[in-house]
Image 1 (tube, helix red, strand yellow):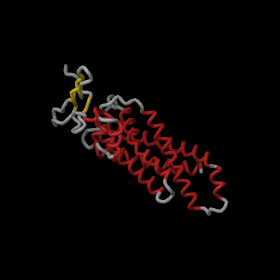
Image 2 (spheres, helix red, strand yellow):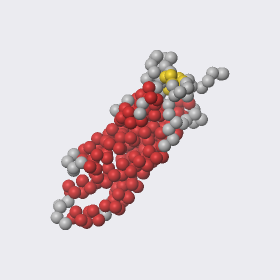
Image 3 (tube, rainbow, N blue to C red):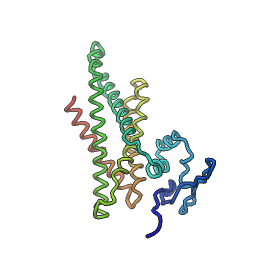
Image 4 (cartoon, one colour):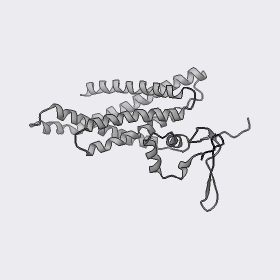
Length: 241
C-alpha cells in the first residue's frame, strides 16, 4: 500500500520501473536498468529524436514504448494536424492520377486543375473525418474491452489510446515523396503507405495495452477502425464528388 507507483516502463520487456535515470551534477546521468530483464530501462533518453522516429518507422516496439509510455508528449494536436495535411495531399495526388488516367489529355487538363483548390479542401474534410472515425471506433473497441474485463470505465485512459493512434499515423509522412515522384507507381506507393499505417497502429495499440490478448484486441480495433474509415470515406467521396 505504501509503495511508490511505477510510472515508467522498460522498453525491452514492458515491466514497470521506478525511474529511467539518475541525474548528477555537471550534466552527468546514470541510466537505470530493469530489474526484470536486466536491460537498460530506456536507451532512447540519450538518442536524438530523429533516431527514435526512424526506429518507430521500422515498427520497433521499444521506440513506441519510449514515445507512448516514457515521455511527457503533449504535441498530439500538432502532430494530428501535420499528419492530417500529409494524408489530404496524398489523397489529392491519388485522385489526380486516377482522373488523369481515366480522361484524354486533350483540353481536359486545364478544366481539371481549375478545381484543384476545391479538391484539396474536400480532401482535407475527408482526411479529418477519417481520422475522427478511426479514433472513435478504436476508442469504442477498447472501452468495450475494458468494461467487459473490469466491469467499469474508471481506469480507462482514452488519452493514451488517442496518443497511440496519432503516433501510429507517422506513416502518412511517407506519402510526401509520392508528391515529388512521377506518376509511375505513385498510387501503389500511397496504398503501401496506408497499409503501413495499419501495421503501425497495431504495434502502438499493443504497446499501450500490455495485457492478455493484447494483440487480438489491437488487430480487432484496427480491422473495425479502418473498415469504418473506408466506408465513411467512400460515402463522403460519393456525396462530395
